[in-house]
Length: 139
Image (tube, rainbow, N blue to C red; front, side, top):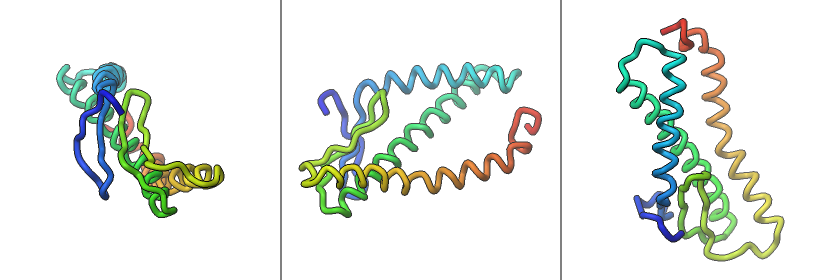
């Protein structure tokens, strides 16, 4: 994608970030940090920025894992994946060729999402079970 910088390679797939990703990082860091001021009043102001950044960065790591799941499923189905680009609206996996049948792309999309959602569902279950320990009154 034009306007992107290469930041690394995972499983042979080039990972890049588009310049709009940096804009999203700044905006989301600020918005999430502002949310923490309501949830956790009394922190020093720099801690809100750090917490906002960490939460936002974690979101983008989750998007990268999601795109990697799609890419690895596509690769397992015989499709070549050249790169993944993260940008303001999420991420995109770039295939070097189109699938022969439309159904292949449909099933790859769902299998990639299913693969990625299993760990997320486990984490969500742990968070819900332990909410009383990490909520505003538990800190």
